[in-house]
Image 1 (spheres, helix red, strand yellow):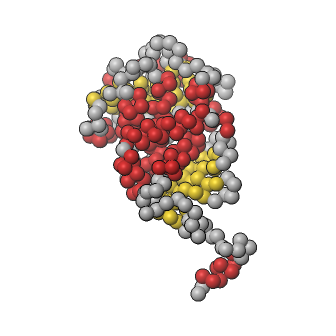
Image 2 (cartoon, helix red, strand yellow):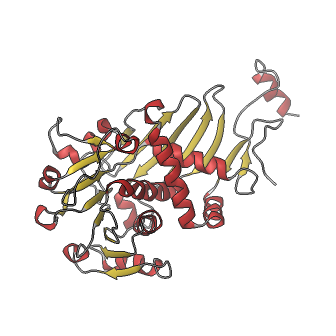
Image 3 (cartoon, one colour):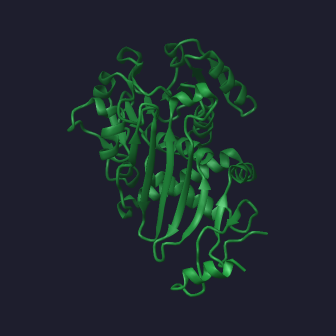
Length: 350
C-alpha cells in the first residue's frame, strides 16, 4: 500500500486522472464537494496569509494557457490550466489542468495531481460555498445556463451545500441540455430542460451562467433579472469574454475573489476601474456585508483564483494518505551527496 512517508528516494506522490476518479467515488461526489468547500472556506478565512497575484496568462487567437501560483508561507502551489473553446469542435476538452504542491522550506514537491476533474469539482464547490453566504435563504431552484462540462458539478454542489432541489437547464445546443439532464438522473434533483434562457429562470432564486465562447456576449440582459436573486457568473474568465449586460452589474452588489484579476478577466472588465466590489473573503470573515435584503441582487463575479486550487490540492493531499489512490514518481534528481550530481549520472551507466 502507498503512503506519504519519507523514503530513501525523493519520490513524489502523483494522482492520475484514473486515481482521481477512484478517489471521488471512494469519498462520494457530494461528500467530496462538501469537503472541498470546507477547505476553500477555511483558506478564505486566512486569505491575508497567502501570496496573491493575478494568474500569468499567455493568450492566443485559439485560447489561453495560464499559471496560477500562491503560497501560505509553508506550502507553495500552482496550477497549469488552458482554456481553448474551439477544442470542443475537435473532440477535445475546452479546459485541462494539472497542479503541484511543494514544501516552502526545501522546495521539494510533495504532490503532483491531475486537475481537470479536480478543477470542475473545486469550481462548483466554490460557487456553492459563496451561494451559501449570498443566495436568498431557503433557495431551492437554480437556473443553469450553459450545460457543458461544469453544469452537473454546479448543480450537485448547490444541492449538497445549499439545499437546491430543482435545476432548470438551458443551452443553445439542445444536445448539451439532454446530456446534462441525463447525467443528473438519479441524483435526487428535479431536472427541467428549458428551451430559452428566460424560461430557465422561471422561479429560480440562483442563476448560474457558464458558457464557453471566448467573446463579449450577452447571455443575460437587464430585463431578465428580477429583484432578490443571486447570480453566479462563472463563465467570464479571460479578457474579452463576458456573459452579462453591464446594466445588470450596475444594479447588483458584486462580490469577487481577487479584484486585480477580476477587473481584467471577469464581468467587471466592462466597468470603470473604480467600480465598487466586495472581496468574498471579507464576507466570510464577517468584516463585510453579504446579502442584506430580500430584494438585493447579489452577483458573484468568479474567475477562479489560485487559492481555491491550493485548497483543492491540500484536500487531495490529506485524503490520499494511507490509500492506493496515487503512485510515486521518480521526479527529482536527489544524489546522496548533493554536490555530486554528475557522479550519480555516471553511476547510472553501470
